[in-house]
View 1 (tube, one colour):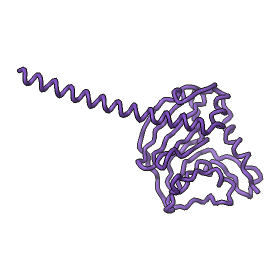
View 2 (spheres, rainbow, N blue to C red):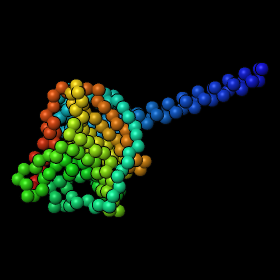
View 3 (cartoon, helix red, strand yellow):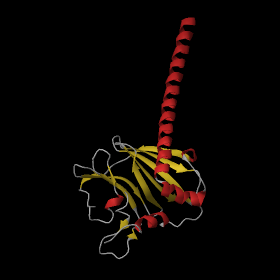
Length: 212
């Protein structure tokens, strides 16, 4: 009886240790992503200031991880159509090691040379144009939200900043996409605004687009 009891206790202790280690790994991952988010907020000062003027100061501690999930990249052959003479070319995000370009604006913004004034489509996409000529559609947003900023964190991770309109207001969000594992982590800011001019941040950016 004593031996059986000791073995049972050992097994329970092992399970608890495994669970504790798993929880610690998840907490470490979240802490790393929060650090990445703080760095991004500092780098994307214009986006942070834009929302700070509406909601007041915030940092990564005000963001909550609400979902992690796998993503279907919807891979298809297509080379990047945004070339050096395109007015949106400066607003793409080149991969740190040269593996193509991340594009968060061309699906949203119509800014061809034939247009006197750029205008916005209702939907948004995050597209990775790989160096091998393949296109991966990584994220899609309908007319209730918008992808407003982005940045490569490293060769495998790309972060997107934007917002979504909920029933109670407009909530800033962040998405960290891992292109190697095709996993995504979705963060919500705890603060929201009851009102928001939906195109206000993008409008600041497209006014800088030269159509000459």
